Length: 427
Image (cartoon, rainbow, N blue to C red):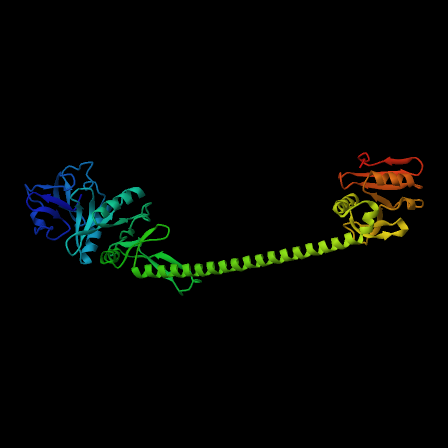
């Protein structure tokens, strides 16, 4: 059943209007023999009738299976009438079941503006519809400059992506149609960033919601997540003020974070510069210490045939061979004018102990302490020690030229016997 029909002379009839929209009375079409009326959708013959609830409408003599108007449910029929009644009560001209000239859409209720142009379709959408279909049909209206509000009785998958209302029908006589979802307000009090702010849907009579929409007191608003609902411009402004405050606070925080990063970068740069200066100072100190050490050992170098060029390598080999922290003492007359070497285990807190002598005079080996190691730089010095040995000796041959290390035990009569991992070198 539907609310509209077409008369060959009177044109379009609307059963929801007192004058049927063509200055005719209901008595002119109700139970009038020979009157020919057609369905505006399928062009099939229809007749005027009053339902048990006193609702005037038109019905098909033979219900066609593919006519949308003929197969509307009672709920759809009543919701259409309620939407049209609400629009008219708000002071707007509204017609039921209006199709475009191209017949690419048919509005359940079409509301016309003050210039008699269609501007808002109110769609009672109770049958299934996909989100893509909702977007497509909404866009189809928009191409003709018509806005649309979709109205449903239950939650639908499309209601958050197109302007819509979810309503509840009256439960008992005297109640009105009620909007349960689709009209929202923004709550934020006090207006500080620490206070929570949120959109919340309100409950209101359907007639109020329709009036607010048609009068422009509420408009379709799209939230940050793409959800669409109806709200007042004042709530949009309030949400925008909150967003601006959050953006400003974020900008302040970002600026503060950037300033912290800048200061930290400056501190790191200053620390790096201080580290560079300290390293340069330490290098200079080491160079001065090295120069002083070379100066101190000038006579030792002349006597042993060593020079400053290979002395650092020899020192590294001494540390590696001992596996301990070492330091050099003085030239010791008591040890054949050899250079004293002191060692301390790395993980102990004790002091340095005498561990060896570098290149002592072979003539001083007659009563050499048996546990005191002799360190020499090459085979030539080992041969001198072997020739002068009068007691068992421990000799470490650390050759700074070849990088090879050998440890030799020298006997007083039989000569030297190698106990190291490598044979003695012949430097």
